[in-house]
Image (cartoon, rainbow, N blue to C red; front, side):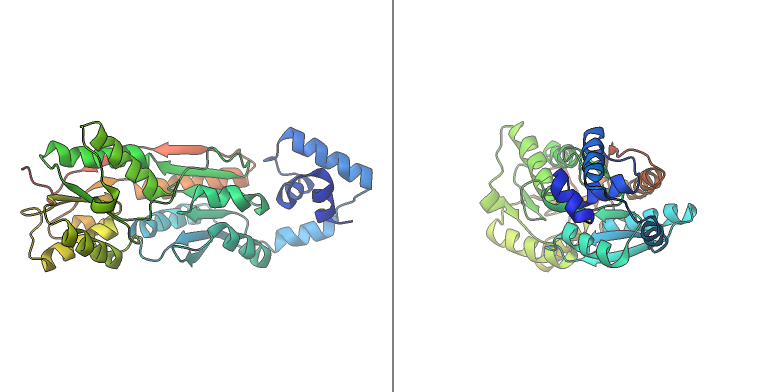
Length: 333
């Protein structure tokens, strides 16, 4: 009889059973009562020496970062690492491809390294809904919300991506732009890019316009090369565009170069708005108007939430404010 047998008999996942055995608080009363009852029925006695050894073998907090070219994640990671270090905690970072299954990678990592907690920078809620039950340690999802998933050991801290994107498109509209193209992301349901697309669509619809996803939207990775290639394709088929909204700053920088290579000036011929307010947006030529998520605050809150959960605190789901930062890349028509 082992923990997997208890999980099978109780109807709960191995991760939930493990949290009950280890006396962790982030388990519902119903689950705890059922699991303890099954343990009593089966005469299951957890091996305290093995459990102590497992705790001693736990490695630092693990961070899983989606993609290597997302500048926002680099800024968030720096803040997260600094605030954890201030509390005496180390951070081990794993970079994943944009199309990787982040939760499955974390499960494999958990089995091999025994981290004491996890942070996910990026990631899709549907992946967490499918498999996060196997994660045994406190975790926080950064830049997307896990509020509706119901996992007691999964917190989240994010920005209202839909409202922020609507603000970006409204800014372009208020400056006279009526033909706005969009680049970035994949549009997959519940992804960050889909939330931002919904915000853009909503802003246009409120003004009596519709976003033509075939003509005016070009998906791409959240990096400079992806933004460059997407902007080239978009400008090639829709030469009457007056503005581009990039769903991330990195693709915005790629679009800036694509416009120059097409003989267009920004903002003289083409206005541009990004999203994230990464550090480079203040030094590009022109400086890019963008949505500020607050990378320092995202990293700080993620660290504080993880530290609280490690001390037995409950999962929390927080939405931090955003703001539009006006710089030099938008002109009034």
